[in-house]
Length: 410
Length: 196
Image 1 (cartoon, rainbow over the protein chains, first blue to last red):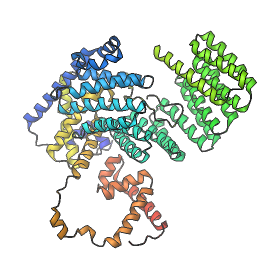
Image 2: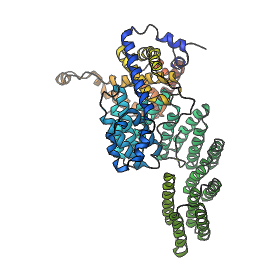
Image 3: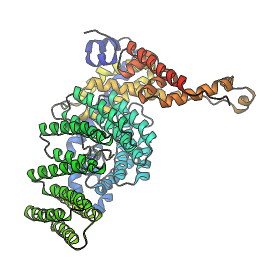
């Protein structure tokens, strides 16, 4: 091994770290000991609170009607870092399926964080606590499409860290959310700058999962601007990193995204190869539900590009895979996509036959009766006035809403 | 890795807290260990801030202190302590300079009116070239832009850029030359700009 002052080498080599640190610090030993003592005491407080909190947030939220959650801000058991960390985790878990609930928790967390006495923790920790709560709130607002409020909240979160250059990792996560908000606001240049800065910071602190996440957000931003070649390059670069680190799941998702890029660039042969690579990895990982989802996503893009036969084949494939996995709700939704294509093509006979099959499948699987009724109405519509693609999309949206509700309930 | 929508080009990427596989995290650390981590690494972090980034000693210590507090909140996500600490102090040092580099004394207004800004000398000749350079810089790929900005706008040395990029100084010098060459090609290919 060649010893050096190179930062990467210092990270790996204890003796070089020691040598590098020598003779630089005319340290005041008492001040240094006091720093260590204060740090250890704060650490102990935070750890103790984490141990004592167990599942306090989950219990309190379950026992309290959602309308009364703002009142929980006065609950002493929730007014600490550990409870706020649990709230952040709850928000993460429910933000996709229940963004309204996520926002209610985020509002509670922000209200607690902003009113904690300033001397509860060291200043830097207080800044982290407050910025995290505001960041979660911004993210929940983003999910609800309340983008101006989301932007305001994320700016406040960033401002809370302004005085603390050392909180680099926290700041980078805020930049990631800010970039996503800016992307949704179509502020593409600002979003790109933000995401680049976040990526550099994640690379600096060796946070590979978030580095990939930032890269994917960047690629998606480029895709939304129809810059598919640039997106392809970003996904390709990320794939090299994911391959070198052996991260199979990220590879699978990147191949999926590369497949989409290839379709948009009219390179269907390459798209097929990418989707196959993605499916192979999802299969190897045992993430079997991701396989038909990949096919479904590809099918929708292919159909959008006018490659209806290829898209239909992938839809059929995805539907059969969902049925094999016993995911009848997803299989039904897939069938509705197929019905939409058939109706657009004027093949109402086949479309009608498929509605009968879906009704039978839904009934046998005990899917929500309202979903069965919706498909039955679609069938009647086909019989009476020849339903349009728009009719099918409305039914699809309704059934999708019900299956989402079902997933939430379980 | 959290959800990335199957239907691509969708910004709804939810999870901001990566799920780190069990067994890769640090073991539970007690109070004594925290104190030890601080004592063992404070010197290194201060040394990096001072030697690699020329941060003054007092500020370097404050930065290191904040990095340790950041660690307290993030420790469950950190797979490898030393690379994280080193990355965090480097980023903190750069951020420190970005913040402090802007703090310049304001020139008294009446004095400013009487005395021309030396930067304005020859502006009629220089401005077109500067504008063209800016346009060309913006047209370069983002990595090229970043490298040239670090070197010529922010004034980092080759060694510092190498540290920042995590590559050797020799390679960084080659990169800078490559970026300049690309910029020059674009400049030569651009139509001539009229003087204002």
